[in-house]
Length: 617
Image 1 (tube, one colour):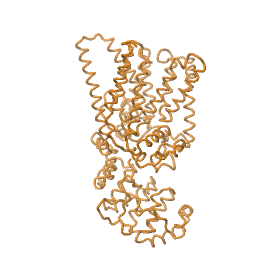
Image 2: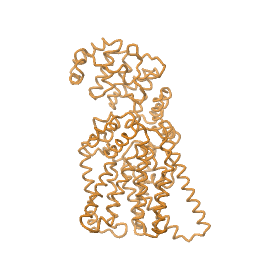
Image 3: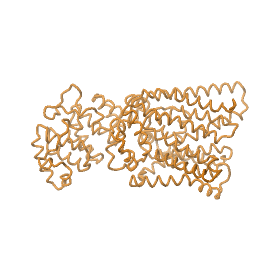
Image 4: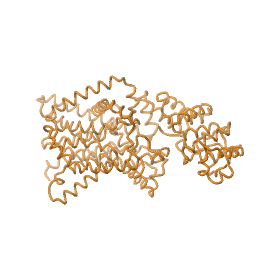
C-alpha cells in the first residue's frame, strides 16, 4: 500500500480516535430520564427468558409499566434496539458502563459508514471530503443526544444498519458478477434494512430519496421508465419495509401513528422543523434536550406560513439547480424525508432526530465546501483566514460536545441545564422536581413541579408527581385536589385514583375504598392499588372498618368483576394478603415521623423512583 493510498485510512483512524477520546468522559455518566424505568426500575431486560416478549409489544412495554396493557396513540416498535439492552444487562446489570460502551461503538460504526458513503458518492478528486464529513458528523454536539444518552441509541443503531444496507445495495458486487453472489448480497442488504427498521421506524422514510437517486432524477430529467426500473431495484429494500409494517400492525394492533389532529399539526410544523434542524446543524447553539411541541406552540401561525413559503421557493430553485449539485440535492431530500416523522412526536428530543438525516447531508455539505474551496480564486491570506475559521469552528464543536457530555452526567445536571437554556419550557422544571423527589427534597420538588404545571397544565405526569409531593410535605388537602382533578379528567385514572385513596385513607374509609376499587376496575393488574388494599385491610388501625366496607363494596354490581380477580382471602374476609408493611405511593423522609401511619409504622416503600404514582415525564 502506497503513502497516497494509506492517507485516507490514516485520516479515518484519526477521526475515530478523536471521536472516541472526546466521548470517553461519558463513562462517568449515570442514568437520566427514560434510562431509569427501563434499566434501573425495570425487570424485563434483566430477565433473558423474556426476550421473546419484545417482538410482540410496543417499545414502552419494556420501559413503562403503565403502558403495558395498551399501546399509546403514537407507539414505537423497536425490538432490536431493546434486544441490545438485554445484552448490556448481562454485562453490567444496573451499572451504566456497558450501555455507554454499546452506544459509543454504534456511533463509531456510523462515523465509519459516513466515511465509506462519502468515498462511494464523491468523485476521486474530492474524496478527501469524506474525512471531513465523518469528523463533522462524529463530533457534532447536537447529534450527541443520540449516543451520549443511553436511551437514544435507537438512532445510531438504525443509522448503522440502514447505511450498511444502502452501501451494500448500491455496491458493484451486489449488481454484477455471479447470480448466486448477487442474490446473497441483495438478501443481506434487505436483512440489514429490516434490522434498521426494527431499531427505529424512521428508516422507512428514506425510501423515496433512494428511489429518486436510483432513477437519476438528480442528474437529469424526470423519466418514468427510469423510475420504474429504479422501483424494481428498490424492491430489495421495499419488501423488508412491507414485512416490517405488517409485523408492526400485528404487534401494535394497528399502525399507531397518531390521530388526524396530530398529523395536521405535523404538516403545519414540518417546514419550520426542517429549517430549525438545518440551522442547528450548521451553527449549533443549543446543547440540551428540547421540547419542540411547547416551543412551536408559542410561535405565531404566520411563522409557519412563512416557513412554507420559503420551503416552496427552495424546492423550485433546488429542482432547477439539481444537475449542478446532484449530491447536495440528494442530501437535502434524504434530510427532509428522514426528519419528517419527527414533526409527529410531542415528547422531549431534537438532536437524535437529526442523526439519520445528517448522515448523507454531512457528505453533501462537505463536498460543496471543497468545491467552493477549489473553484474560488482566493488569495493565500484569505485562504489562511478561512482555514483558521474552520479550525475555530471545529474547536467550537468539540467544546460544545464536551459540555453536552457533562450535562448528561446525572438526572439533576441534565434537567438543570435544560432550565438554564430553556426556562420557558416545562420538561426541565418537571425533571428537576422528580430529581429532588428521589433525593427526599420534597419541598424543592413541590416548587419545581408547580413551575412545570404552570408551563404545561395538561401534563398528567407533572400533576401526578406534584400530588405526591404535596402528600409528602403534609399537604394532603392539596394532594386530594390534584388527585380528584386527575380522576375527573380520566387521564391515568388508576394512578390518580390510587393517589386519591392515599390522601383520604385516614379520613374517609368508604371513599378510600371506592378510589382503590375504581383503580383496579380500570387496571386489574395495577399492583400499587392491590398492595394498598391489602395493607388497609390487614394493618391499618381501622382495618376492621375497611374490611366491612370492602365486603359491602364488592356486593355492588359495578365491582362484580373484581370478585374474581381479588385473592380468595379478600373475598372471604374483605382483606388481601399483605406482602409489605408500607403503602405503595407514600414515602416519608428519612428520620421524620409522619401522620400517615399503618399501625405503628411510617409508610416508606423505599425510594421516590420506586413509587408507583411517580413518573419521570
